[in-house]
Length: 223
Image (cartoon, rainbow, N blue to C red; front, side):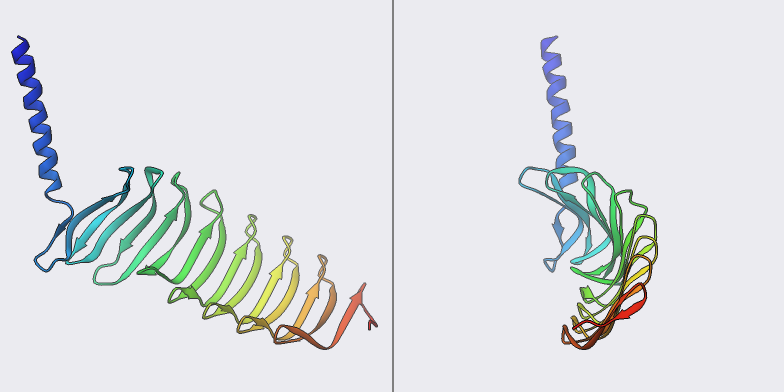
């Protein structure tokens, strides 16, 4: 009787071992040219999964999931590669699986429009545009109420063009202009009631010329 029990245990172990071995034979493989091909899985030193996805002749295809070293319950990055393209649709998550941001990437570079969310994963916090991994184009940020906080413009990673900032009641606070990351040209500043408080011009990030100051909508003379 005892022999039969041992025999059953050994057979079960061998079946499990063979099944796992056979499964492993179909992952982390290379093609004849030495390129990764088929399903790949990589692990951290603590044995938590690092990523899993599929390659075809060295190129990522389909869906790739990446995990945090401390918790492999939820992927922190999900990349979905477009057919016959180097572009991937990307979603970033917290280790608890809450959506943080979405957009597209080529390699490690962000491209096009990216959206960032508050911790509820639904309310839009930031909308920005990238070109070759740097900010380029319009940038918008939002209060939790959905009202605009800022409308900025970037060129090759630097503030360039109109820059407007708003209070949470929708009132315009700053109306500025930038050139290659520095304040340039006319600037106006308002209080929370939308009243102009001072205005002037910038050159190379420095105030120039005569600035006008206001109190209760009346211009004041200041040295």
